[in-house]
Length: 59
Image 1 (spheres, rainbow, N blue to C red):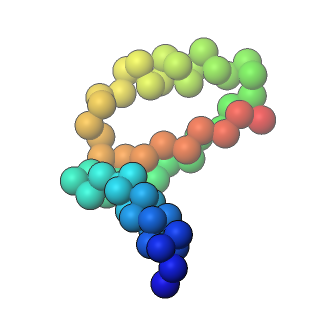
Image 2: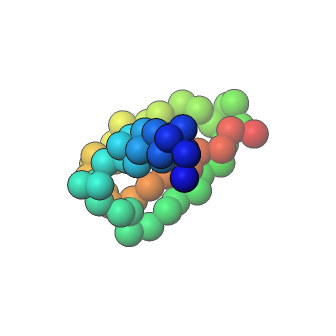
C-alpha cells in the first residue's frame, strides 16, 4: 500500500465516531413542498434520543 493510500485510509477512519449508537430502526418519510411544515412539527415533537434514524425525501 502506498503512503497516499495509507493517508487516505487513515483520514477516512478518523472521520467516524465509533462511540455512536447504531439506530434500531430506519424510518423513511416523504413529503411534498406543502408538507414541510408538518415535517418540522413532527421533528419538533420527537424526543432527541429515539434510537431511530430518519431519511426525509422531499418530492
